[in-house]
Length: 107
Image (cartoon, rainbow, N blue to C red; front, side):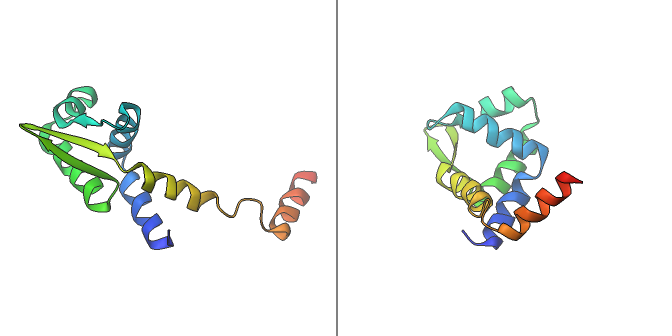
């Protein structure tokens, strides 16, 4: 993942409602949730939910599937995992930074 994509994902999830939606969909698992269920569980107006789902969909964090009259939302788990990996991939790899942190803790 490049830094621009990571910034986009973080920016879109940086809204409290969108973060609640992502967390709810993660808890729902691979089958996702119908838009109506998301609306009821988060107690938000349909137009507001539609706005936030659009942001998440356009960023590539969720996808939607139509099942007859039901619109189901699912998380792109691979992209969430890539983001976490991107944020942690260089953990503890810079001895100079680790030394600085150790020096500050000993003061």
